[in-house]
Image (cartoon, rainbow, N blue to C red):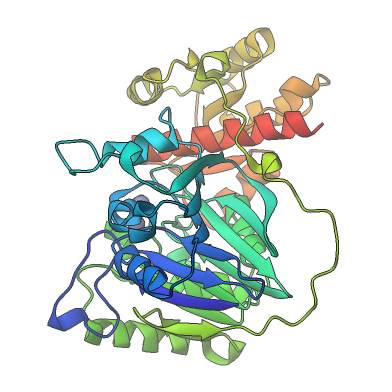
Length: 446
Ligand SMILES: [Zn+2]
Ligand SMILES: [Zn+2]
């Protein structure tokens, strides 16, 4: 497997003398597998040179799979400048998380409307197919692809690619779920407390290479929480906990020049210590070869269909909002109202249980500290119900309590997710969609 970085910068392209070594182009990574399968991870401005290189290679027709984490600018701005899309006969499959109410094709067409770009999406000559994904596993040629929701204020997917016994994980535009980690992380690279962070470690587990969001430093992070990006030091902790072999720090902040990145890489190497993790800063133009070890076992291909998001119809989802603070209920209502959910609300734990039993919501957003029963007691009562609809309903605890013990207590009470206040509306939206889609996929599977 050959991996080449064509764009490593986050948020905004940043060319110039101070970013020459690590590069100024935004996210784009080329992955080539022994059987010839071409996978492109994100389509930021780095895709311009990748496209030129593919055309110059003389390969005809060019067939590839474009896996987008999400459709924020820095991950799609290279799309209209990707030369192979203008050549008839070429074929591309484009994949991304099923968005929040907008089709992938429409989201990409948006940046190519007349006011912004002279060529519309429909005028591209290559054959392009669009696929909207949820969490799942499917095969592209010899590559097994596993998708996993990331923690970002826009529904984003990470990708784990496995072929010939080699595993590469691409997880950018992600931040840790716990807020308490910066204090405890330095002490040990142990298993995180938050269930979603544990899932992240499982997603990275044993990978030969992890390309991970590392936009901030731990020092900068307190001012950037909920922006959806990781401090590099915590990417190291996750990689060590997951026994990853090599970690590429990625999605470099536009303000981080080459010298500052050198310092960040050095401090991350020290943090990795004797763990055996090899840390480096992903640099534009850098190529990594990973020897594919095993011959591919003949097995039935996993069909893409299993990972295709089964359009969750917002109108069919009932969400119960529970908080004794009317401002929070109002904020949540405003955040979710645009999407046609059926919203119910309660201001104390007893009322919440009554409404839940009567209305059987698909999801609860539940405050911890309330009069009457508190959030944890409500959750324990739900988990003791006989009816599986109630017993297994996803419960997202909303709380101002950030301690590791608090987080552990929340999960022990049976919460599905633990979100610390204050939160951003965009973050809540993507968490709600992730949980509804997971619930829906789970119901399909049973
Ligand atoms: Zn980004
Ligand atoms: Zn983003």
